[in-house]
Length: 283
Length: 212
Image (cartoon, rainbow over all chains, first blue to last red; front, side):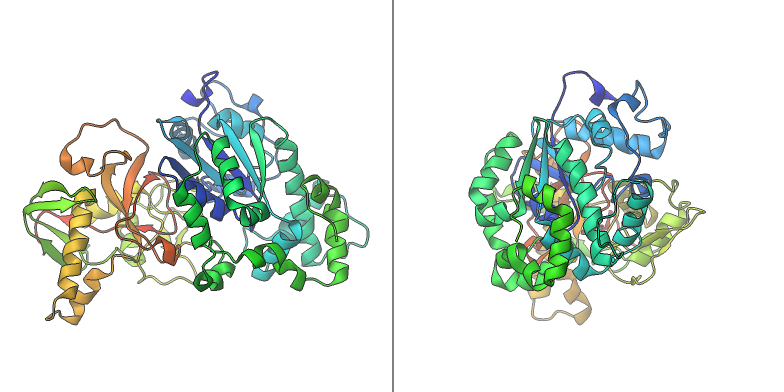
């Protein structure tokens, strides 16, 4: 567990909710020759993290020789965490990963991986929810209906007025809880908050801000790559689950065609305080 | 256990990379296509399956967008809704090594991978190519693991016998339609965390002698 050595910090973590452009940003930073990023080493690799989103894990649970009381030294999860921590800390290049889970374990994650920089990538919840609903209630792992029920049962999500339990409402409820966890964590100095819409409208300005935060420069190759993903021939791929090709207009305004006024009103009522905090105007 | 069709790469000195680095290679044989899901499953199970239910060692059975499913006894099976005959994505470096070993071969070095694709393109471009050989050129189905330790400033280190420190990364070459048209490029080179079984990375096999 070299990563727990005091003072040593390196690498980065990109945190984002599903359908917020995290694959896009993950691939964008990787275009830099000296930046390497892993796609979701927890949620796509280790089952126990998927099964256990609600429990809060803290830095205090990391002790000498153990990553967590529930993770046995010598177990495969312990070994993977050790490898990941070594990798993030290693070398003269910049290593990191993006993740779409662990929002209640960020304090613990920080103690295990010891990244130097965090990026919270956020997207307008109306657009995110529209995108999620377009995919349906995705699958057993990403079931927003099931997550919402769990959050309600654990009293993490008070029921808003007029709640009927529709899939849209449950998806909004889940977004709001997770966004609250992330926004609270992102007040710490090693975090920056990046809005996907700002990358779309001002890629060079936002790209430079992100790469500076990661300790690197924004390269012409990255600028070219962003624009290449907007090619008209690729727009039909925007609905692919993990595609990073996007139409600018669809990212920013596509949700307006997805909802009626009552639905927009529900999302804005529920998510309004966070939307304002994150700079999204309420209609 | 038998890998599929191979083709021969003659011994010789080859130029690789944008700087036309000269590398001497012995004769070897390379599988004509990436290993399929069925082939990988057979190999993993012949070695006892996936040892842990918590995370994977050889193939990514956690990501439900990949074709592997781990049963409680550790046996790996085809996930419902997937085809067993498609190129297998989702192998870790250890999984790729295991597959190669089980079919009697080894992973290509980065230089062998690049020379192989150049030769396969020559084969496919020739006038008198048999239909069965045309698929030799199809290197763009998946990115592929190479045996070289990844150091960004030291390409082809595995063939140049450079002494480099161990890292948690190995070279991956090529691109994949699984990701995007933008990814498809045979000269694409990247480093990959050894324990990552991604949706765009598979394996081909190199043999020292022609497999029977």
